View 1: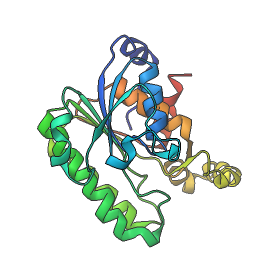
View 2: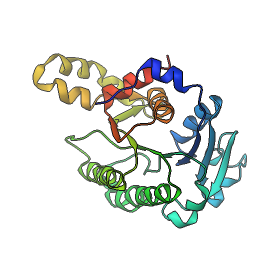
View 3: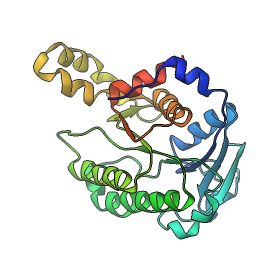
View 4: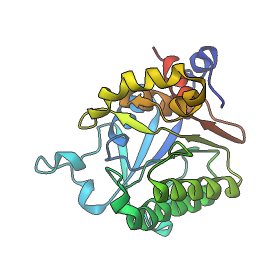
Length: 241
């Protein structure tokens, strides 16, 4: 899979970009907005009407300072597509939190529908680069989740937009730490040729690595469609160390 060089990252730091983000009030979205605005990028973030207010009573719904809220419905492109311009980069982070097999229907009605809306809005706004967080595939579990994310990837490809698709498996971070216990197991599997490729494809990445890889994707736009698997996500993150 493709990766990004440190020289490319350093040169791209000189150019700030107007970025539109869906899912900006979420787990990754808030942190990505903070990282991008700190580097001088102009960020617009889609929010529901209830999330626009930065009330102390609902801190989880607040957008980080420095970005411009755009009120709309992530499931309906018509509610926000006119507000995407002049952004040249679109980052789609909407998705069901804490995915599990029990949420199969939500994957179809939220994850897939919101992606279709995002692609429609980005296409209408003629953005030059679309960034999407998918999931590692194939994998032995979460079949519907993988199917929906794979369908979303096909939608992106069919749009003709330049795109970067990130495929993590499990992201370690606050509230998502129990898989740290599996790290020795992963190490063992990577030593066995039969299991090495699967262990790397379904490896663990940290929340910080994801944010840095997303930042790298924004600052180093792909030509065509670039897919970053787990090893490539880790490599992309390293250019900011």
